[in-house]
Image (cartoon, rainbow, N blue to C red; front, side):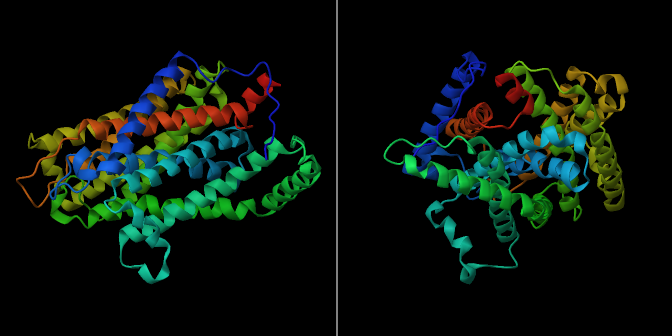
Length: 404
C-alpha cells in the first residue's frame, strides 16, 4: 500500500555536495555500529572496568537528551502560554526532538552490553523504583512515544486528500482518507494533554540525569559534584532548548535558501539570558555554600575546564544576547546559540567523563576510532532524516509556501 506525494517542482533537491559528505560520514558510522553489534563492545571500544561508559553515554545520550530539549521548551512557550508568534517554530523543534530522542534510545542500546535485553525495562516484575536509571528509562521511552503522537497531525495533514492507492486497492482510497481525517480530528481534541505530558516527562528525566551523577559521590570533582546537579541540568536544558531551536532554524534557512525568521528568533532569544542568569546565580550560591569555589584557583585541569565551560557557554552568550543589536542579527543569534550549545556539551562531557575519576585509578580512557565514528554517524543520520522529512512533510511553513 502506498500513498503518493505531490511534489512541487520548486522543492529543493535532497542531495547536494554537503549532503553527500554527510551521507559518507553516516555510512562510516553505520559500518562501525554494525561492527559493535557483531563483534561486541570490547572489540570496538576502549571501555574498561574503570570506565564502563565513555563517549557514547556522554555525547549520544547525555548531550543528546539536553540538545533535544527544544521540543518541550518551544511547545510550552507556544501552546501552554499561548504565545501565537512562536507557533512557526514548534514543528521544526518537535521534529528535531523526535529524531534526537530516537537516536538517544539507539545510543543507549549501543552502549548496553546485553542490548537484546533492553525490552526488560517494560516488564513490571523487573521494575526497580529506587533506580535513577529506571526512572530515566521509563520517562525517555514514554516521551519518545508522546513525540511520535505529537507528530501524527503533520503526517495526517500531508496525506489527507492525497490517498492514491494503485489498483486493485483503489477502493480503499476513500476509507483511508476518512481514517486520516478521523485521526486528525481526534488528536486535535486531546493534543493539549500530550503537550503537558511531554513537558512533565522532559523535566523529570532532564533533572534525573543530574541525579544519576550525584550518586557518583567523590568520583565526580567537587566543582560539579553537588546535590543541586539535577536543578543545574534542568536549567541548562531549558536554555539550550531555546538555543537549539534558534540554531536549527538558522541552519535550515541557509540550507533551504529561506529568509531567516529574525523577528521571531530574537523574541525567543530573550528567554536565554534570563535562564543563564538564573543558572549563574544558583551556581555561584552553590559554590559558595559548599566552599568548592577554592578549586577554581588551584590551577588544575578541572579548574580550567570549569572556567572554559562557564565562560564559553554562559558568560559570553549572555553578553551577546543582552546586546539588542546583536540579538536581532542572524550572525549574533547563531553565535550565541552555538556558544550555549557548546557550553552544555562541555558541561555534560565534564560531568560524565572529563571530571569523573574512576575507583580503579590505574585505568585510563580515550575513545577508539569506532566510538568517534558511531557518534559522528548518529549526528549525520539525524541531519539526513531531518532533511528528508522537512522536504516531504509540512514542517517548515516558509518552505511549504515556496514549494506551493
